[in-house]
Amino acid sequence: EAGVVQSPRYKIIEKKQPVAFWCNPISGHNTLYWYRQNLGQGPELLIRYENEEAVDDSQLPKDRFSAERLKGVDSTLKIQPAELGDSAVYLCASSSSAGLVQFFGPGTRLTVL
Amino acid sequence: AQSVAQPEDQVNVAEGNPLTVKCTYSVSGNPYLFWYVQYPNRGLQFLLKYITGDNLVKGSYGFEAEFNKSQTSFHLKKPSALVSDSALYFCAVDHKLSFGAGTTVTVRA
Image 1 (cartoon, rainbow over the protein chains, first blue to last red):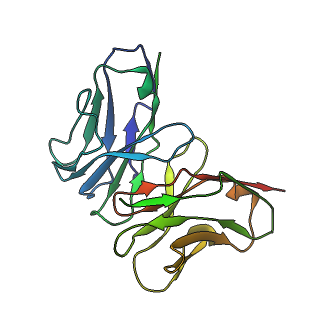
Image 2: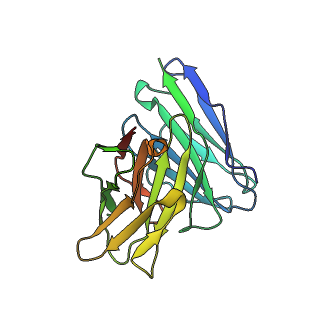
């Protein structure tokens, strides 16, 4: 069974530029999560989807971050414009339903110069 | 708010010795508790979870954890550590996975 797929694995951009991350969850997993992990810290939840509905986006900085999961399968997280402080690893995870084990992708390491 | 604390940034043990990684939690109601491991340049991997039932939970790679309600702890243990157990370990609570800061485990040969 394929795991959670994320792309790109690495991204380097100049500040004020836009950037997008893509995630394809494990087949059949209805719940999808985006996390941000800063260096030396644990991941922090940005947004959680149940199918195509964002059910928890309280930690998403909505002035510059947006996310979508149009058909309830894969998802895109966007930052526009990026700031220096956005440099981090962005992790995607999925589970068959909320409350159960989450499976994580390898992450996208973003560097903002 | 749900939260966990991992009081040790680093744990160093010799191969073959017992390994313990500490975690305490603060939640309202009954907690969902998880341990994940992160190897260099790889994604987080699930080790074990406590939802309800037996306080001693067994997980992957020979790890186990004991849920202690009176001490609000969920320490991760392995009776005999391997060099390959060297990694970053995270405790997490709740289905939204509020993570601790992580504990770096180094097992020396």
